[in-house]
Amino acid sequence: YKIVHDGNWLLAPAKPLQMWSGLGPHSELRMPAYRYPRETVVAPEIPRGALSEPKLIHSPTLGYGIRYRVYTPAGDEQLKGQLPTVYFTDGHEYSAPHMGSATEVIDNLIASGQIRPLVAVFIDPRDPASGRNRRASQYITNRDFARFVADTLVPTIETNYGVAQAPSSRTIVGTSLGGLNSAYFGAVEHDTFRNLGIQSPAFSVAESIYERYADGALADQVKIHMTTGTIRDDSGATRFSELLTEGGYDFRFTTANEGHSWGQWRAQLDEMLIDLVGPADAPPAGDDP
Image (cartoon, rainbow, N blue to C red):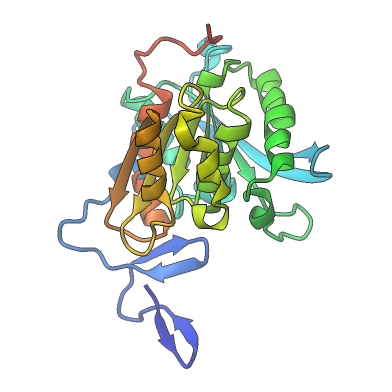
């Protein structure tokens, strides 16, 4: 929350706790029963994966360059060719320790055996030159962006990192507009991405997404894990879950008593990855039958 004074948004001076959203820091109020997501905290005693420096790739379909970073797990050499991949939109925020904490969550889940080792790709929507955020154009049912990820970025990752090459081994994750984007990828790129991580999806800005999933049209093509908050956050997630139930989809839908912020999204990321990536003792990722 923030305080509004003379038309200006202010942090509460007496509350030192803060939580970020895409609009910056907010004052945070923790209720007595709140459980801090310990999986988001660095555990010094476990092996940690590596996050690359930003890389630049040109998109033929979009006509401009896009930056991304790649997480590789500790000790992955023996698993070359078998590692699943998770692609994060808004990657600069998902990978930030004070926001998405994704690499910390992944390290902890791998170390505990709750997920198999994986490669994560954090796609940055900001213009490499100006810093302008392009997410509003990239993530709203943008066919050119979907083609860039599927036809340019995925082959680049699979060539350079030797990961598994099957739709069932690939996951796309996003929040808000990025959650809408994940659902859109499932509709138009399910031959590349079978697993969809959808957090607080902004379906209200592109309600045509419902039609794409109506009547179970994609039920045999995708697996979905969707999360949302209960505080001014449900912009279509409940309606979408009802549609998925009617269509016989393989999906899981969870809610949290939180708002549209990273406090909610990072705290639900562990269950999403466990569900979509699978535990350490699951069969290695490989070619789909």
